[in-house]
Image 1 (cartoon, rainbow, N blue to C red):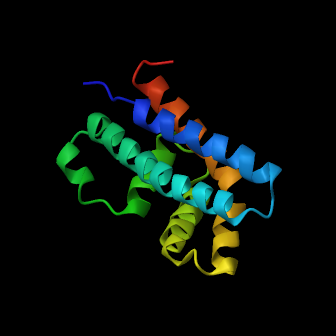
Image 2 (cartoon, rainbow, N blue to C red):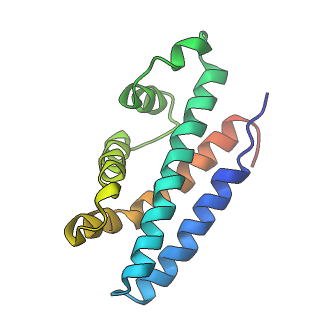
Amino acid sequence: MSLDFSPLEKAINSLNRALARALSVPDDEELRDACIQRFEYTFELCWKMLKRQLELELPNPAEVDGYSYRQLFRIAAERAMVLDVEAWFDYRERRNITSHTYDEEKAAKVFEALPAFAGHATELMSRLKSRSGEN
């Protein structure tokens, strides 16, 4: 069974386009908020694709459902699917505060991590594709 990476690829591309616009117009709240929304769904797709890949690779796929987010990413780091597991833990924290984007300070904190997140998401997708035989 192979994974369909097209939703993740589209989400990452969408995030990158929004980031490019937002960084060219630094004080545009609507662009910032659009980036944060794209981060939310890109983040969700990243960890769901990672989970699906682990279900394919681990001896007991049913166990994967019982793993916490941190356990999933630690296993992914052990298997070189992600290189900076602490960054992914940080992205999770930032994702959890996105429901408070009405707070300028919190929105700014989330937004500042987005360029690095986009790079890590691209790296994750590349590593997952490589493991599944896609390029």
